[in-house]
Length: 390
Image 1: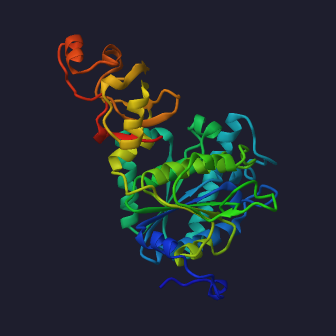
Image 2 (image 1 turned 90 degrees about the vertical axis):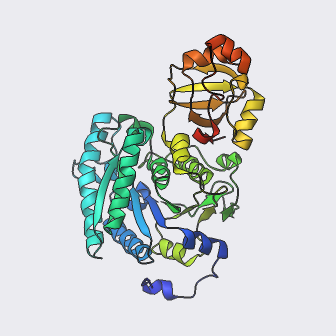
Image 3 (image 1 turned 30 degrees about the vertical axis):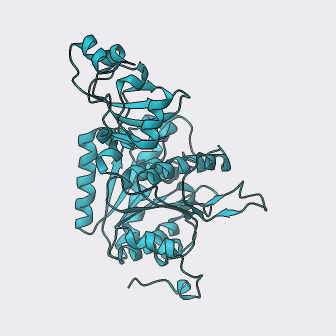
């Protein structure tokens, strides 16, 4: 049994059976920690936060589960070594801060885990690493190998080379993509708010949303569009990542990472933060990559009937339902399938190149044969290579 800190032996709230089952069925716990959780009010790095996090993750590990950490904070950790009073705004300075901060941050994590006899390893990744199928599988192999050696992987975006990630990216999406790589994951997103509220948490009448059983895009209306001054994400970013994870069968807990026993309470199955239940069963790893990791090379626009067939039933996309083609994609490339309202309803691997698909858009079998001379594929995107995302 894991050893809990003294304060955790005080009387606790009753165990929530749903949360208990969520933890019991998880084989890997992926913890994402935000910059604000690791920072003091003056934006300096709080080294004691690393020890608290390492202690709790060690106890999660003691339950027999694999654990991985996706950590923000590299740029914040690099301010002091560079003599900067605040987070810079120009790209070269951001990259310099990230480079200096990565070394400092990893040293603090390595020391914190070493005192608990747990080895760690660093993985610096970019969005391109997930978009490329071969590199995606290499990440998975590395991750599983580290788990087999009893190592805790500490993952971050490679901000020193990922120009676009520094500007617009965030580690919430990275954490969701990492969860896609392992079987039966539980994603725990640690922020500075105790989950989701039905309005601005600063409002004294705001009510805590403890459980989200089924995703609804109306949840985006509950959060502000503002970002943190220290990090690159915000609550909207977290919800987008949570939606992606839940859609492919991964439960997510969003909770306050400043609590010294938040992960202990997750282990115990207590009602901490907000639990987002997975939508249906686990989606095969191949479809998860197609739907959320690969990068669309083009757009296939479809009519309302085809959109519902893809979104509602996960059926193959036929040429008869195609109304337009955008981009210069080839056969086998990932395409985004977009309905008549402009909303994406799915992603999949195209059986036809854009040039041929443009010719047969809206046509049926005999008409396709008359146009192309043959019907190489009965579908534009087969359901085995398609994931509804709408």
